[in-house]
Image (tube, rainbow, N blue to C red; front, side, top):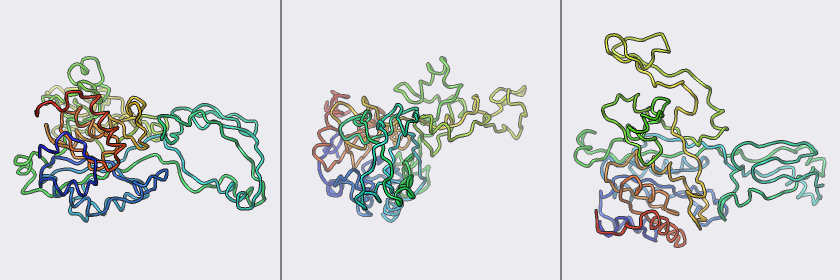
Length: 405
């Protein structure tokens, strides 16, 4: 097993996993191909089938969790393949973001092109953030860039000026404004678990796997954001975060949900502002919101979250990968943000555990595992991405290949 630890292996993951010992990894966190032929990349032509997940099941310890990203059009194939391989589907998380780029065909333009008609240029717009002119009118886009494809780095097309054209044929006029796809705004993440041996308690004690790190992934509230709480708890999304076992659950933050978002205005606007959640202690409820989270005269706590309710603030948030997240020279088109991958690794991996990523890409999962104190095994088929992953890991942890811990 030591031949694989803390290494990025370039090769077919099915073949590499077949050479790994049985029941040797504590979790699997991965971003496999979605089968969407993403920007015509050969590696994205199909969703990994049952054989991949069966081999992953073999190398996972009993009770080990699997987290696998999928595409909204193809995650059903991913989930079925994982289940058919013998994994138990436990949940499906959703990662919401406001910066998705709509990959929609303009039907009006397609009709004019088919007719050989030339369209009149009536204005110009930028492909990124800012404002654009449209038939003499001005509109403004707030927030992030439109999520243009980043094959050459962040916001490669953000300032590209593209023409606005008017329909040229009667048929094109009729179908002006019609397209073929919605703007992507979320990605599903399949959560599965290898069957337990015995009860959950027996499995956890024997293998260290089978449970989720709830307190380690709680979501900060108004009460846990304060200066005193930062000293004690850290911030939920930084290197100093640590759950305090002596605190009640609500004092440590909100229970982690199967929803993650990027904190953008678009996502925040989806959620209505609500009052703080509350529950009773010992069957007693307090009708006054001002007292939620406070102690009654009998010493019991009125359960609440000590915050102002809020909307998307109830959930863990993580923006899309930034330039610093990607690292210099990282041109992988589907880089996941480091804070998201750290959160996911922390959720399913026991202390000191080994995280396997059979579709490692540019190494975000591996880097996240290291920063969380875990060991990793990364497998990537494309040599150019293996080199990027190795460079990122080496730059972040120069002592990685020191004697074993």
